[in-house]
Image (cartoon, rainbow, N blue to C red):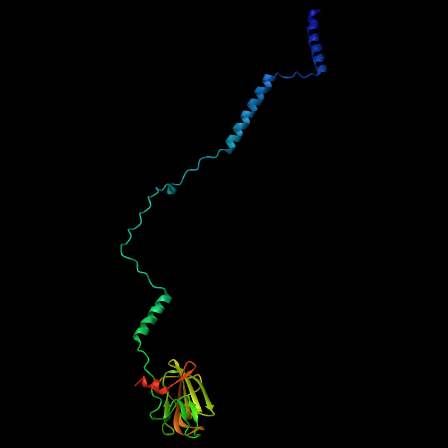
Length: 232
């Protein structure tokens, strides 16, 4: 009967479909639409996560930038240039040299007459001609002998011909004070002009009280009387 066949047909059709277990592929249009929708959703998620809220600027930082101040007007007065220390020292030394008095001429070391002059002379003891590199000033034994110039005592020694001798370098000359009885200064001592450097005595080759005075200008002996004459 037809009324009985309708349920049977339905159940038979269901059993047939269950037995087939087939998959009907969707249409390409539907697939593309689904992919577009999915991509749009993902993009919205990413953008919303990356975007940060705007940070308000603190009012303290909203300071108006002022225009730079103009430089002060230059002074028309010339700048004072201070000399370098070395230049100042040289200028001071020049002024001191100009103000300081020039050293006086040589002082006479002892008062007395010249007994034997400078140069080739007839020796009073040996009676022959000998070169005399200085002058002999006759003075009493023990008389003070003074420095002609300020300087340094270069040497104090005993000479076999001129006896005890003090050598003073100063005033541009080297002075030999010989035939001394005693020396009052030591080697390398600084002496001023007029300082007593010893006392007059005798020498082995000149056995009479006197001062043997010799002056060197460089390596050359010069006449002490000419030197002393410049100071008189």
